[in-house]
Amino acid sequence: MSHQAMRERAARVVRRLRDAGHVAYFAGGCVRDMVMNILPKDYDVATSATPQDVAGLFDRTIATGAQFGVMIVVTDGQNVEVATFRSDEEYADGRHPIRVEFSGEKEDAERRDFTINGMFYDPIEERFIDYVGGREDIRRGIIRTIGDPYQRFKEDRLRLIRAVRFSARYGYAIEEETRRALVALAGGITLVSAERVREELVRILTEGPARRGVELLHDTTLLAQILPEVAALEGVEQPAEFHPEGDVLTHTLVMLEHMRSPSPELAMAVLLHDVGKPHTLTRADRIRFHGHAPVGAQIAEEVCRRLRFSNKQTAQIVDLVGEHLKFMHVQEMRENKRKRLFRKENFAEHLELHRLDCLASHGNLDNWEYCLRKLEEYRSEEIHPPRLLGGDDLIAMGYRPGPRFREILTAVEDAQLDGTISTSDEARELVKTRFPLESES
View 1 (tube, rainbow, N blue to C red):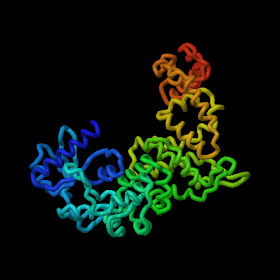
View 2: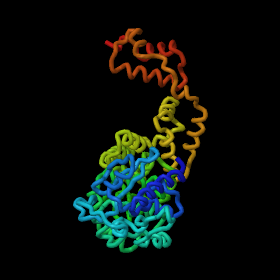
View 3: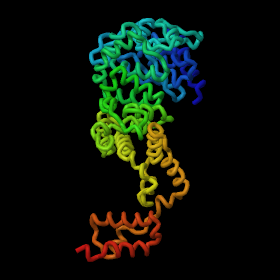
View 4: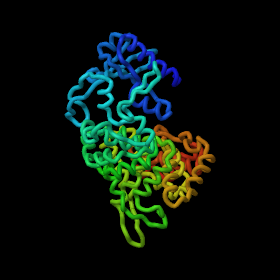
């Protein structure tokens, strides 16, 4: 659906509410984007109509949060969120109000998080309604809470990390009093569910600029609360001949700066790829980090579990972290080992992680460029050749089923990938030579 059609659909919802005698406007993020001359991704509506009023005016509605005054109006097969103007009472859990009271538009604006998100827009009369100074703060490039920042952050601790996300995304400064309150209350982020923290963190890493976002998390002490494993990278020295950029945290930040529209999995792997270094640092002839990749993979798995990433996402992030040093010796690898690396699921992200790692350190992209050339050379069937032998073939040759079958079949495929065999007969000869039947007894 086009952006214009999406806006017109939401405007029809506003008009229907207005025709029924209610006040109704566009609200929240879409208005912020309009002021910034950014095309909104969706349009939300705020209204004086109660959830019951909304349900009575439209043919199809969904009560997603009626206790908080939130309804979904389904029109033309698409959803429009409609929320009743409200003021929130005391917050019990650092995230949700105990109860809400329906109110007027000014009170609704004043209970929102930041001034840039507290404006309304009337699509019928084509005018902005701004009770909180949002347009002026956008003009000045400022992230400011509405009202007392300590109260706003205590009401909803997720706002702590949202302030950082908005500041990073738009390149806005966090207003001084808002920043002081954020730092003072940073520990409260631990009261927020891991899922919500993960969502905000992923948005910081993928919406960009990621480096500024992580620097802000670090400077406001939120990083130490959310990801102490990453905060611990500060001050961890690296050998200057390989890492002229500085310590491990600086290296990670430079990698984040070089990312180009990363997936959540790649972005997290960049952030976590060197978390094993503080645990493996040794000093002899020079600074070394023996085994930091597998140690980092273990830590990355713990982080992903803590932040409630899916099993699939966790496996991918852990694999990226654990395998990121493989490219150091890619040109010296045997063909079978190199082809197995190249046919890994999400190999493109493994290669991109290596590129970023190089750009953020010594700058030598020889191995990355070699991989690109090899990818062009390898035909699909060379990386994924048809199987020459299977378990039934081994049984027919007199071998007993068991764990050794995997070793035998892997050896056959390695030889096939190396180009030393290409037929089933050659595979049988290899098996007879390397795995004689008498060894089965």
